[in-house]
Amino acid sequence: MEYNFDEIIPRKGTNCVKHDALKQFFGSDDLLPMWVADMDFRSPDFVMEALRRRCDHEVLGYATAPDSYWLAVTNWLKNHYAITADRQELHFIPGIVAGIAFVLQAMTNPGDGILVTTPVYPPFLALPENSHRQLVCSPLKVVDGRFAIDFDDFEWRAHQCRWLILSNPHNPGGTVWDEETLRRIADICYRNNVNVISDEIHADLTLPPHRHVSFSTVSDNARNISITFVAPSKTFNIAGLSSSVCYCPNEQLRQRFFGYLDGYELANGNIFAFVGAEAAFAQGEEWLRQLLHYLQGNVDCLRDFLSHHLPKVRAILPEASYLAWLDFSDLGLDHDDIRDRLVHRAHLALNDGTTFGGKDYSGCFRLNLGCPRATLLEALHRLVSALE
Ligand SMILES: Cc1ncc(COP(=O)(O)O)c(C=O)c1O
Image 1 (cartoon, rainbow, N blue to C red):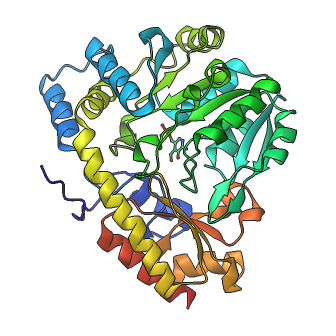
Image 2 (cartoon, helix red, strand yellow; image 1 turned 90 degrees about the vertical axis):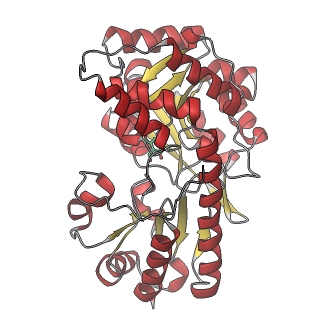
Image 3 (tube, protein in one colour; image 1 turned 135 degrees about the vertical axis):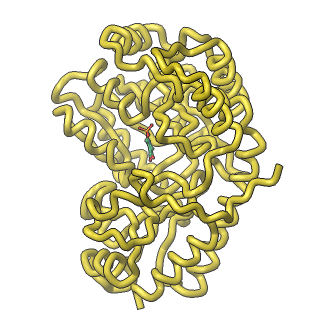
């Protein structure tokens, strides 16, 4: 079957954050939404059919995860992450942000240092602060148009920390961390008694020829100090189902973390989370193949457009997923001016770069490319008119 990612599907009025929360976040409704990280594509037919079939039963009592769900999860982990997981090493999680918050609550104490590499997905900054842990930021460098870890800085800061929250691949830059980088992170963390949360929510969207490397697979050290989160939510555009999975091979960490989840009944799951994820993982290969091809086309489109029309904009283009990091600082405009132009002149909603790590990221904005190409082109033409 040929999937049509060019189809424009109106989403306004469906209570979705991306289209229906614009007024709350940008002060205006009349914007083309290129912000929140979900895609404007239809969720896959086989997921929708599975959900409809379950709805037809019309009794929506408490749900349990069937063996077929766990089989679909373990097969996906084996085929896409090179993880051979026993069932006992896995736990359902109602969402990765919640999962990270649970780790902080269960495994750290107030005042503990939590390391992140900036710029980064804003909840990585907010969760430690909201739970009164000490947020420690190691700024990434930009090398040859992609983010890279500054290992001297990273190691020095790791020394003050108990946990690292790693976005693997990275959001906002879509950077794919290679095996050597991950092994080096693992060694530094191991030496400094730092455990690692590897958030791999964007991993399935790694764009060939790039290859996702799952953190726990790079070494024994990595395996022993990590908790990995994966999900079908970005991959199959089903974030609203709140369905993700945690993998924890170290028995001590697992007993403490899974014991906390079970003790407080924080991660029991729900009917649609299991049904949607099982269908996605069991039947999703071809849909994903076609999606990756389309997303790569959008990345190419952005690259070409910028080089022709906005050569002064420095872009970090995604190697995974559909988020691009745009740096407008060479245009000689200040940050607030750019933000005003985007919203009021271009009627565009992009994520403000400063929310990913503070004023070091003034002049930067994140653009979501997970949309039909016509929408992307419309956004890019508006961008030119805003910045002229
Ligand atoms: C790196 C990263 N982690 C987690 C999430 C959200 O995960 P969830 O919806 O499962 O809480 C996002 C969403 O953009 C993300 O980019």
